[in-house]
Amino acid sequence: MSTTRWHSDRARAAGGLGTSGLGARGPGARGWTDLVLRGASQVLLQNNPLCGAVVLLALAVVSWQTALFFLVGCTGACAVALLFAADQTLVRSGVFGFVGGLAGILFEVLRSSAPEHCVPALALAFLGGVVLAVPLVAGCSWLLARAGLLPLAFPVVIVFWAMTAAAFHRDLGSLASVPPIGPEPGHGADPFTAGTALRGFGNAFAQIFLRADPAFGFLILLALLVSSRVSTALAASAAALSVTTSWVLGHNAALVESGALAYNAVLTAVALGGILLALSPASVAYALVGSLLTGWVHIALSALLGPIGLSVATLPFVLVTWTMVLGSHHLKALEPLPLDRLGERKRRGAGPVRDGLRRSRG
Image (tube, rainbow, N blue to C red):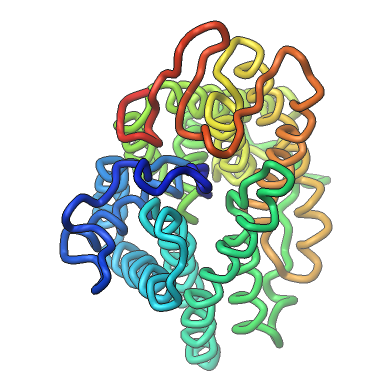
């Protein structure tokens, strides 16, 4: 889900790896640690090892197995990228690692509930997903750069679909249930309480890591705060806006509480609000509008993909963010940042403000 400086000067790669970086014989122990931590932070659209450390700690607190498979997938994807001599700027920033890491989390989620006969196929799908992450990230970054776009989490979506279809190709129908958006006919609506809103807010962050655990979600919010106050404020606003909108529209309280309608909105707000667009009141408003549109697109894609057993994953975030970045080129109130300037949160009329992509606080 990366918004790193894909085509920046390698000497200014975010944070660098110093003497423990990527040499001719590969990264040392410190280099590997840095790669993994940056990969963990990239899930939240940051490039900050400290943020990644908090993410990994949060994963380990709620499930050591989930943390372990994230580490395996992240390390494996980085190793494949190094094996094929991928661009060092991409490797250092953690963009390969975060795709492999999320593949590891998906493997753990599916493994815990999969029929026993599906586990071997799922393990092979996980291995394939880790390898597939490398050409996907490299190829998408090269192709989309011509339109001034980043892959964001699109490689994650493809890997998720490939893993799911490969492991459950005969049982996709069993994964096709789409929860009702509103109360089911003939049943009273579940009460929408303050507790519903609070749990929905927390799960908006937990669902980014395929979990429904509000406490874990607040730890993820803390990880984001470690990296960027601006991103944290936008993410919290998007989550609160999503929950409030669901309440106004009368959405199923259990669905709202799960955070399933909000996590894509959170990512969209973070991406548009000062990372892909210069930070300004207009870009903040644009980001929040984008977060609302993401919820609508999520519902539409769920109806389309649910019958064939595929999750929308982070596709709503990707499609809405791409659309709004392209649109911003013809909206004078907004300033899209060129790819070689990503990581500099530039205020209109002011100098650059460093953010989490450059290892400082937003």
